[in-house]
Amino acid sequence: MKSLSVLELSKLYNINRQTIYNHINKGILSKNSNNKIDFAEAIRVFGEPTKKEGVKEPVKIDSPNSAEILLLRQQIDMLKNQVSDAKEREVFYQEQIEVMQRLLEAPKSNMTTFTDQEPVQPNMAKTDIEPDTTEPKYDGLTTQVETESKRIPVPEHVEPEAPKRGFLSRFFLPNG
Image 1: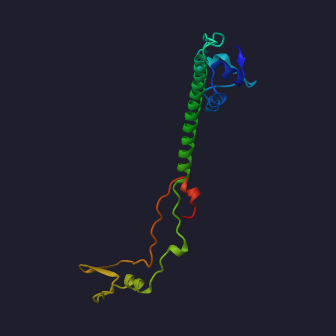
Image 2: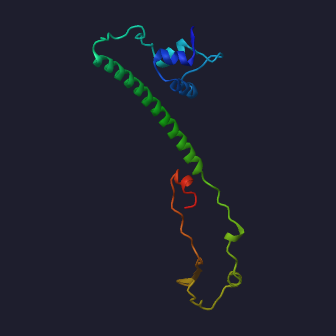
Image 3: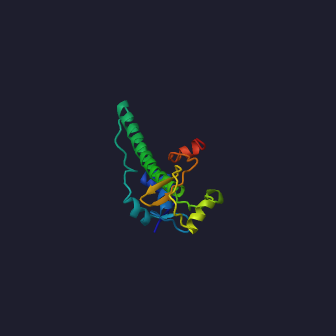
């Protein structure tokens, strides 16, 4: 089969070279060992090439409107190619953003440090060993549940949790 370079393929199908490279990177299109693309592979991906290369539309030299129309059609085709390339780039970058967000939001293991642990109070150890038969005193830290008293720890200072931030604000506003 005939092998084509990326430049020849882009001219034949009137598409941007970057589109061809994107198809190669995604695995939609494959290259030979000599870095050329088989014509059969190109037909499989892009279809039959249009045969309008040799045939041109009849243009009257006298009419400036027809020259403008031809120029505008060429610009429209070029813009269509640019829009399709931009859409492919957008999809690629959106996938990259999702991957990065998943990596940033990966669950972190909860490790307790020595400073996180609460010290054991000596009077609590005594109540565990010897049951107290006297009526417990109300000191603001305990609650009475029928005959059983439970100790409720009161934290000294609780810091509010920082609000969740978006992906880009982590880079542009790193500390605040």
